[in-house]
Length: 379
Image (cartoon, one colour):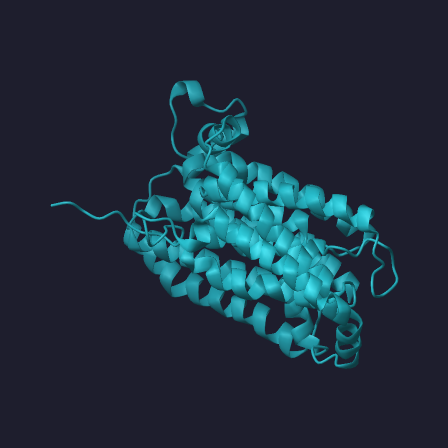
């Protein structure tokens, strides 16, 4: 009897015929429609701006923080880090498509901005057309929608929301955003076509570079972007790192820590003695599985769940602003860690509990040190 393969959220539902969202032609047509729409709405840019600036209906304390998390998806550096994290999770084909989309989109946008030289509605500079944030959001979410139906709502809701917020914040005209979205879809169409070629770059990224290597690469890129921004106090990567990074990296730790601490052959022994001692510590046999499992279930899990609730709820209730983002990220990271430990317990693989617990806790401590103090200083 043939056993069906287990489906995950990245598996397309239709295998015989390519889905609509996975066809390059669909994004080419969508881009052309948006370019035509940009020409149509261009004469009403000023009226739209006056209406939006008059009706600032989203200026509500806690809501503004959540909208800040939506705005993050319009940042090219942040979406590139997320693409690397997807590759670290093992979805290298998706990461490759996102990377190609972002590169093509970046080239088109950065050529058009100085050539057109349109002044922003707030008068800050003359690089308004097209909207880079709207283009980035569509170039990021559309490849995800092409990969799985699970992400179609994100492409339909979040990507347009990023563009709308650029007009709401008075950084772009309406036609800038519509054109930028079209540029993003145009780049996605090219990326989908380019990835079908199975060129050497595709084979290198998807076949030669291992998923676990992207864990280190994503961490390096994240710190390379976050630390300089933290020093100068700009805050571009602050909300993203505070809220999204703890749960993402805790889950990566849950996946890869058991692999890192597996016993290897003599040829693969680490050179550093502390690393070998660490391996021996994690590879110690669990003598009483039921005792460890009961302790984890009856003591650690309830306390960790209570701590997660304390970190998430009170900061938002008392409107603690930046601290609320950092505490929420760590609280969600704790929930993700508990989920990973529950999954391990269900599989009865008790040797994985200790390395997963320690590595996950270490990730949360590092994230707390990186974000809570700066959040306190920001007030």
